[in-house]
Amino acid sequence: MSAARKSVLISGAGVAGPALAYWLLRAGYAPVVVERAPAFRTGGYIIDFWGIGYDVAERMGLIPALRQIGYINDRAVFVRADGRVRSSFGGDTLRRALDDRFLSIQRGELAGLIYETVRHDAQFIFGDEIASLCQDKRAVDVTLNSGARRTFDLVVGADGLHSAVRQKMAPSRGEPERFLGYHAAVFIAKGYSARDESTYLSYAVPGRQVSRFALRDDHTGFLFVFATKEREPPRELAAQKQVLKEIFSVRPWVEWPEIERHLDAAQELYFDAVSQIELPKWSAGRIALVGDAAYCPSLLAGEGSAFAIAGAYILAGELRRAEGNHPRAFEEYERRFRPFILRKQKSARSFASSFTPATEFGLVVRDMVLHLAHVPVVARMLVRSMIADRYKLPEY
Image (tube, rainbow, N blue to C red; front, side, top):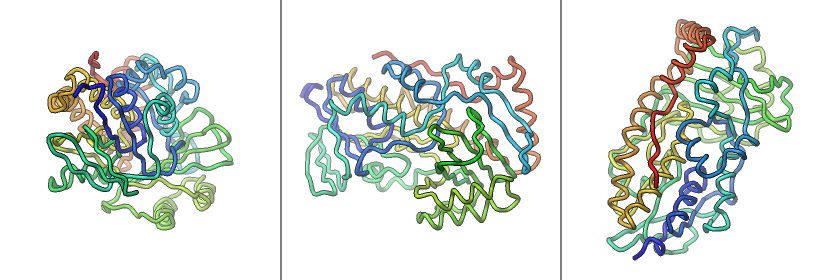
């Protein structure tokens, strides 16, 4: 069967799914994307976008649009409980070190841009999800929750940290999630009084940190991170809010009373464990994984979406190069990308503890490093050693 006739079912219409559909279309495949949400989801938390994800987005022609709807962060400020500045650094320092190939954007807006490039050419099925998979040497038989049954040449799980496809692909492989000892929560409020445009503003005490960032249309995004021994976060909205109140009302920031009022009014709250996914293999037969489903670096790593886009590009590129020989393509996809991912996951584990220091001494060390970051040569060295991506994308 020629590549032009091969069909691929992709589970998940976040960032990785539409990105894979984009590159599979250009490789001559027929992608179908199934998403359990009833419609495409926009908005979401703010992510920083740079490195290999930026490089792939450039190849997709998305950079002008990304710069138009994204945010340029001019300053990161860390404050004391009373609001006084304890340390800061300019966003221009970070951008110069990354050759101005850096911006911030809401995750859903990034996904939406990619979705718009493929929604007329790839089939999207919303409000449904994979119930069962049965593969043989010929194809994969798929049953959806709606009862619909279809057969595909390949299936790819692009369904995130808690991937259902991953579980169906290898249910006996044990727990692939490495919990890093933190929970994170995000919500967006309208009408918050303090704006501090183009500034990432953050307050931390040992083991927890709350940050805010001004968005368009009088919206403000809030990020909470705190250390915990509880692996499983609460799932009910009321319970999630209660946990945040109990933790962040102790030694509170001067802004906490207003934050708490907006938290009470929030109708949506992202709340999850800060974890990584580690698998011995990213594929099994005709089923493969991409993005967080395969190699989540953790929310605090800041590059999950970038790695998802890059992984989609490489997976589709290897399928194209292998001319439909999926075992060879899946093997090459891992050979090219896994060593890079393992290095970045290791770096992310170290970064998690510095992002939310566990001690007062750790906070002091963080402040000292940020003061040094005002020296251009030191800043460039720090940025390139800590977050720069040393990876040359293959050409397909």
